[in-house]
Length: 309
Figure 1 (spheres, rainbow, N blue to C red):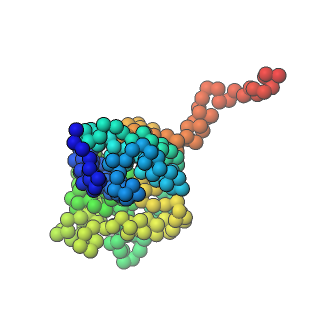
Figure 2 (cartoon, one colour):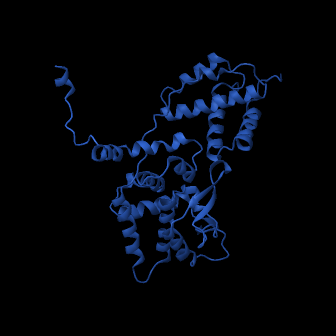
Figure 3 (cartoon, rainbow, N blue to C red):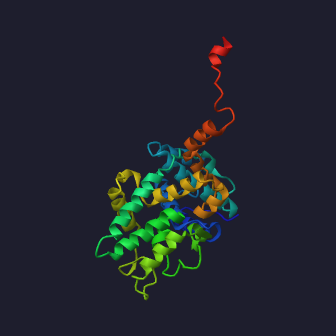
């Protein structure tokens, strides 16, 4: 077994992050977050993260007591995977990661929009498009919203679409999402028509569907545009964002009877558990459905307390 020496933390952390990228297919955001968490942990342990014993890990975890549960969960996950990597590489014979807390993230239900909210957004966009003279930026906005809500794209995926990603004769596009994984994304006729109208105003020499400056539209600018049209539609700023439109896509598909596995594929979720959060969002509709459609819905309920008496 190779021996870990004091001062090896930086090199071992880099090796671990390279493994995450090459073998585990982790996203760039995950790799960056884990890298930051591991370097901070190494700093807190005076450069002895790779050599830390259980007692040292317990002391480190104690310093996290005032952090949010989601942050503690992520930090714990980063260190747990790091020590698992050291075991796999036969650099350690033990795993102090068992001392790390498992707080759970306490995942909250995602924000979403009602059908009326979505109708109001598209009505606000159409009102802008109908202005004379028309502004090509309104056509861009329509294409962006149609793809966010109609196909459930992530903001980063949307703004970086190549100019020819959406074809008029193909009701789908192929995306390379998190971890470099490819997935098939359905496109509505409305979305393809909106993209075609906008693309007529894009310089054919530009490689991006939504160019801006020397590159493509930024996620920050997309967020601002969604907030602006949300305000025009009467939706408070804390209730709308590009990600909320993605949530609305998923929720409304589920309400329409979409299969959860199909939804997982369209959203690009690696784990079905991530997609299952939408079953909770849809629970109110399911309760209403049972009360209205179940054969016993019209049967008077028995008062359990009175029955026992």
